Image (cartoon, rainbow, N blue to C red; front, side, top):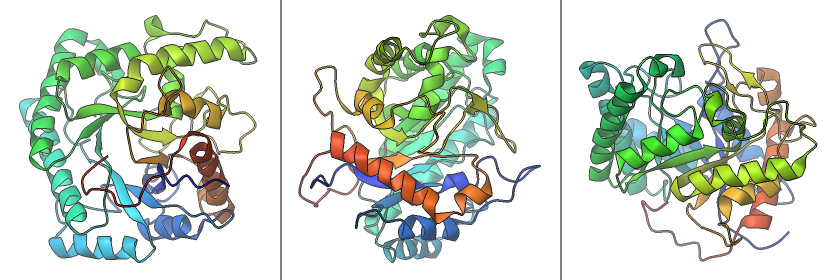
Length: 353
């Protein structure tokens, strides 16, 4: 065990919601996700915090009062945890939808930023971003790529301008199920067109793996068809191509595993399958491959964000309510920090990432 204390290690609470309900298993409560995170421990090391999804039934941003936000801050702090990045509940208004849709999208970003700012003031959120996606499907985007991308960019620009008023940065999630974000090349084009200093990319190792394979956008495939997963050299070069394009934009990062397939449950469309940290079918060497996101092309640490998060959505509830699951995840996160972390004084300026 070394003395690296950054990046901070977070668990996500939204896996208790994503893919749950609606012909699937029931959601897992926020309190249960929080308690399992707080209980995880490996050789005396514990999680430093949580990233949260501001979505029902965990939260309702339309009805959250200042007292509710204070209670949330107190509850998390009582577990010796911080709050980092937060997911804005923008799915009621697609970013490439009607004028009213896009106004709803921006309003959900505004409300999320208000909550995020208040949590910073309360001292429980010293770092992190607001995460968004396009709330639009690749299939709808493909009907008019130019026009739909223009609408997404305009909506993201408006959202960025709102976020800037609260000192927040927005991270666009790289996931194959979101239109205008379903290909690594299209994702870069979207980020470049938004052209806002507080706009960045949120890389999830499980989702970005699917970029290599061209799911939902075969013309941008990087790995050859019928790729042999035993060919580690070719895989590494493909991953270097991907990270070279997206790493400069990355301001939020999820450690995760994927077996090279897609999966969806509940109302969630098919996307990169999150696997357990110990899954023998996982295609990623999690610790090594995380370094391609956390280090630049010269092997130097970028230190582009103060925390990293584990994301494991759409696991069965029996897996998610097993404490050993979270201990195994924490053990993997610790290895990532040992290999690609650093040590610095604990004082972190509020609102930094």
